[in-house]
Image 1 (cartoon, rainbow, N blue to C red):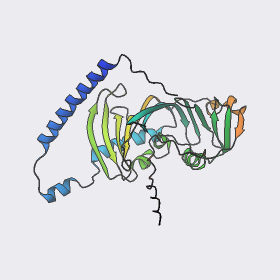
Image 2 (image 1 turned 30 degrees about the vertical axis):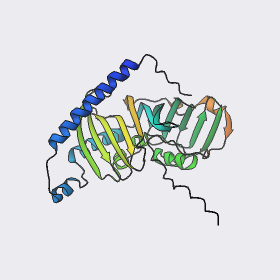
Image 3 (image 1 turned 90 degrees about the horizontal axis):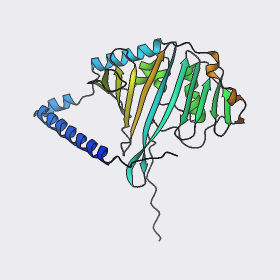
Length: 292
């Protein structure tokens, strides 16, 4: 259960709305000033999908930095929106402590919000552990992290929104199907460092990424899925980065999980984790036939 507390925040909300309105007005004025009349041919050429060299270079740099690491650990704070009964979206959060070692070891501990979970992969088996319920599911696993992540999703709807950062070729995962990529500018407020902002677009999703200008590590990703009529937002903040740390062998196992009550490693019957996953397209319900 996620609890919300709003008392005492009226002034902060009013200030936030004022700042947002001011920024929006300034942005609209700037955009209006920048727009110039163009012929239909020029406008069409301007809208043509394009992979900007600077954006791709930044994406390659962060991908190469991650791919070169033989081990890594980081914290992922994920915020995703879900429709409410009255219309405006509600925001839910999860936090995951991640540790991996190439080519065949991974641990993801997600204490909350919601039901806590732990995932362990050691090159031979995958273990999904629910500590509060004291339930564990274990299955044989493929020999690589890439294959194990796919098997976990296909077999049990286990998905991590930071999957593309863990695979052997992050650039291929991130750049697959790109139709548009462009450089936005720099920020000095994300991750406590200077970051380069890049927008990445494919047929399914629009993602804005903040990447450290010096260390080339991703600090935040913000996504909206293009087939989602509600334009719900998904955000992931990445902190506590450590590349090539020495990880103890027992990092990728749990004595508590071994002693838990076993259950089948299978799809739970619901949908996969929706953070950073495209919404499922649904067909409208058929209208009942009229009485003859």
